[in-house]
Amino acid sequence: MTAVRPAELIAVASLNGDEQTKTFENCIKCTVCTVYCPVAKANPEYPGSKQCGPDGERLRLKSPEFFDDVLKLCTNCKRCETACPSGVRIGDIIASARGKHGRKPLSLTTARDFVLSHTDLFGSLATPFAPIVNKLTEQSLVKKAMHHTIQVHDHKSLPKYSHGTFRRWYKKHVADQSQYRRQISYFHGCYVNYNDHSVGQNFIRVMNAMNIGVQLLEREKCCGVPLIANGFHAKAKKNAELNVSQLEKALESRSESVISTSSTCAFTLQEEYPHVLDVDNQKVADKVHLFSRFMFGEWREGNIPKMKPLNKRIVYHTPCHLERSGDHIFTIELLKMIPGLEVQVLDSECCGLAGTYGYKRENYDVSMKIGHGLFEKIDHSQADLAVSDCETCRWQIEENTGLSCVHPLSLIVEALE
Ligand code: SF4
Ligand code: SF4
Image (cartoon, rainbow, N blue to C red; front, side):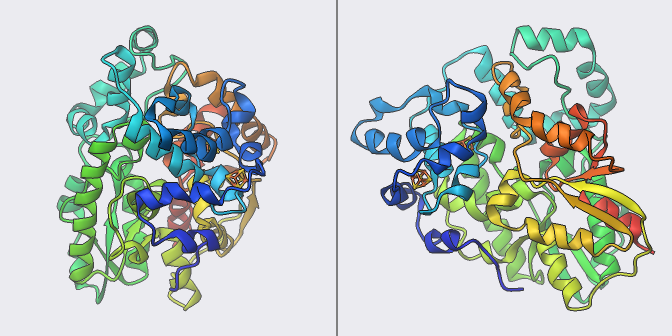
């Protein structure tokens, strides 16, 4: 299916990282970005998108001395970019500046940022001992200790690990996928690999019901988004280079596309690699899709599995990065195509967690303030379930509302005959 992207994304898509930062020259100083910035609304200490983005960049180009640590308060949600009428990549400018000029002094909070962002390392260490690790991290004594030492807020629960990785499960349990005439590759991401295999299992079930085989990439690293958010840009770049080479390899073989079930992984592979990490993904970017974009194209052309009515009412929450890419319309349309499903689309707003941001003791109150309106709307919705494509949005919604929050694929699997 032909890519549908917001116009400003297309206009600047061919620019490299350095050229991207120059998009600040298009700023007409309207301050719309700051009005839409959820952090500026919730935290008076944050100067806002315009000042940290285009205004700050002019100064930083004169001298890196003008770099201000306050930039670490930006959640990288990109809501400013969605709002900007001039196509200024404000979030990218801020993220790149943090990578270029931000320092990581030796401290307990740097150690915390390292633990929260190196998902492959800690996922590989934790999954063999998942039952013990999960039990330990839910103990209030352990939470208190983390609160006072590495400053992970004790009101937060760390995500649970699965016992073993998704890749191991795939090798052992998935019947030969190459029997299908059509093949796609699956970028499963860290969350599916280490925390919740069910999203990946549901994806394979739905693809097979549409007569499409699912291959994993030969190798896959964390897409890099938690590393970017925590200032480990060099490591994120290394991951990006490996992932791009793996995507190229998969697309050169039998796979017609590479699909992600996580809105943030898909956005990072498509947009953050060239614009924040300066990694050329031009050969693959148009073939990497969020599951719903790919499936909507298939369903529209008649490759739609048989589904029974679900008779449920759900509220859909649009993740920030999905709003930015414009691909949320595909998920919403897919959900509406499930028979018997009543879909209420919530006003698009940030849930406040922003990956690892809301776990940090210093950000917790702001994170809750940002998400408050969304939590209230979900609690008053009288829906049976909340639905979102982003794993961290789902954690935040489940932790702060009375509803379970599921990935759209779990509803499609439930509807399969
Ligand atoms: S919304 Fe865009 S044009 Fe307006 S101030 Fe912000 S960056 Fe500049
Ligand atoms: S990326 Fe989000 S938090 Fe950062 S300046 Fe833009 S709107 Fe504000």
